[in-house]
Amino acid sequence: MPHRLRLLTTRERDVLRLVARGQSSPAIASALGLSPHTVRVHRAHLLQKLQVRNSAQLAVLAYALGLNAPERSPPIDPACVDGLTPREAQVIQALAQGRTSKEIAQALGVSDQTVRKHRENLMRKFQVHSTAALIRRWWAIEPPGDPLGI
Image 1 (cartoon, rainbow, N blue to C red):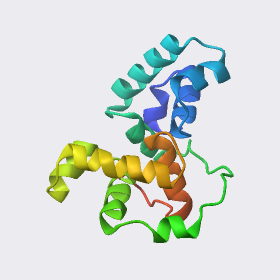
Image 2 (cartoon, rainbow, N blue to C red; image 1 turned 60 degrees about the vertical axis):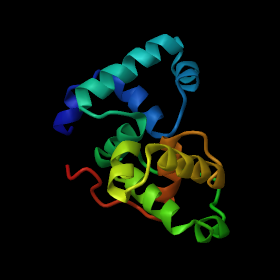
Image 3 (cartoon, one colour; image 1 turned 180 degrees about the horizontal axis):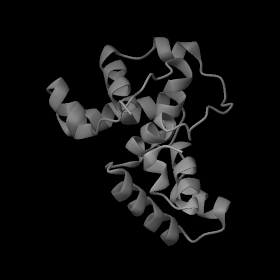
Image 4 (cartoon, rainbow, N blue to C red; image 1 turned 90 degrees about the vertical axis):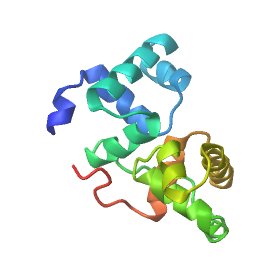
């Protein structure tokens, strides 16, 4: 078991797997028989223990640690990928590397709001409701190498 995983409780690993699949706190709570508040507490512990800032980075880390095994998802319409603007492609690639909106904005020389708008457009095009789910769908097209250099 990788060193970082040894820091986590069994329940935190369960929550991490579901966060990495793009599940919301209420969905995770329902799946694990917990309250949404308890799930939020586990998320906060995960962020602290794994030293990441958001659920998207948790998804990237889960993949790097081998917890985010691909599962069958609806096929992605090739036109969706072909329909990405060059800027959307840059944003989704940076998200898949675990970068935050602020980091992406600084790297691209745009505002945080512009990055958030691109992310919203990407989530609409890929028919997902979270950044973690967006990253997961992207990895179905472009599998990552070692996103966090672990």
